[in-house]
Length: 265
Image (spheres, rainbow, N blue to C red):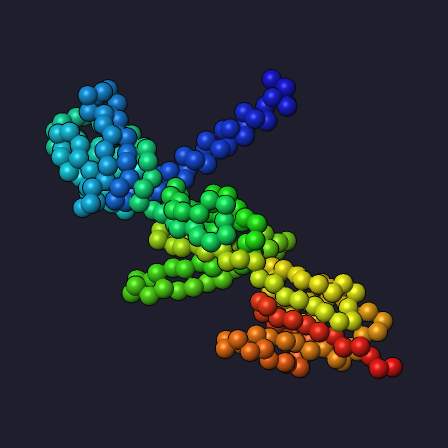
């Protein structure tokens, strides 16, 4: 087999292995459907659903509580029950998830395929975004992850896609999503730069920026600029616009307007 033909085969093997690992790590929950097969006992093979009480029903041994267990753990549990209750010797049971229904994450906002996505194992924030079809036109790179804690209180964390994928990403742990999380992708935030800069216009606020960085995005000061004459106009909650003298390290917010005055000399 040539090297070129070997590449798809190796890729398929790696993908299959990754899918198997993800399924082995998946914890069953209410509504999940599983295929159960018993080696040498075709009449005992069945497809069943995890009931509202967290159990499945299997021939001979009846109801078995499987909620929170991985498929391999359920296999071992069923094998032990069949052997200990005298039905089989050296039981060999295989459990495979046929349909994932319980561990879901909601993806909302400016994505191409909003809705609920089933988790099939450890899944990162960027992987969930990819499963939702990615950010659609008009969406920003700010990602809002909403999570409910054990007390039922919601927590909110914000991330920027560029920071999750930049050159330093390899040095940081991946952001993992959990059952019940909600990922919201807001519309793209914007800021405006006018006056004596090289490229005045409207810019996307796709990462945290300060005034100096925002001016750099617009090409920096032009020869007529008063470098000490930078003014920021910011809309207030009541709808009024406030004029602010800013420091170059001040953060830029959605809707901010930077204006660079002309030098008098």
